[in-house]
Image (tube, rainbow, N blue to C red; front, side, top):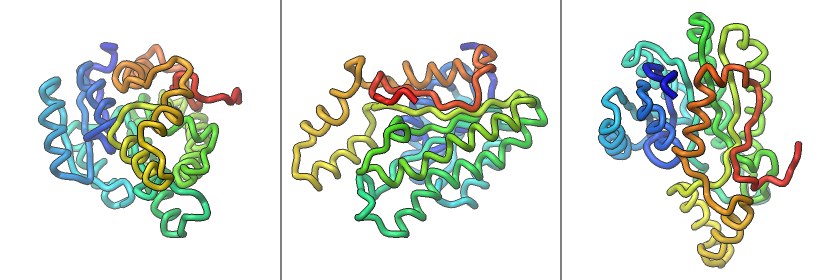
Length: 265
């Protein structure tokens, strides 16, 4: 995937789990990468680790629920890299998940919408004008297969993320003529600290063991009988879509779930 060599990539929420793995994938293939996290300690650790692969990795603390913070993030990334060619919008899980509709409060919805939806809209507005002027760009919204098959215990995320499918379709029609593609990645299950934290809370609420929930809710529904590999599966897909070979794919939601989703629509 040498076609991403020298590309300038911003990956949000990227000091552990999915985001970090994606950042490492681009860094390994020679891209300049900016990462972010709310935690300064996590940011510093991730920078040290990823810079062993590629020294052209930069980072700043940022809060996905704070639009002003995201404006600062984009300004920083543009300054240190000279621009942004590829935007990967990744978000951590809501701290209230898993949660059902009856358990939610309105402030939970406000937080979730800022985290998953408004952040993506704001970041897109900040990067699209430059991408259009350069006649090249890639935007990826990382989401979940559960947007296709909503889960009661993930009501905040599934409802707040679902509009990104419509957003990517609209933006793809408006910006395709400028060489900019926009896609949603509906991810399956990956072994991350965030996923384990969410299921640990679910185990505590239900009284079931973590091991039973992990086996029955996560592993057994996967047709290929394994969890996803962040760099091998997700990273490779994003690298392909970021190359010229992926330039015909835009405005779509791509399932990367190992066959978990039963829906055909």
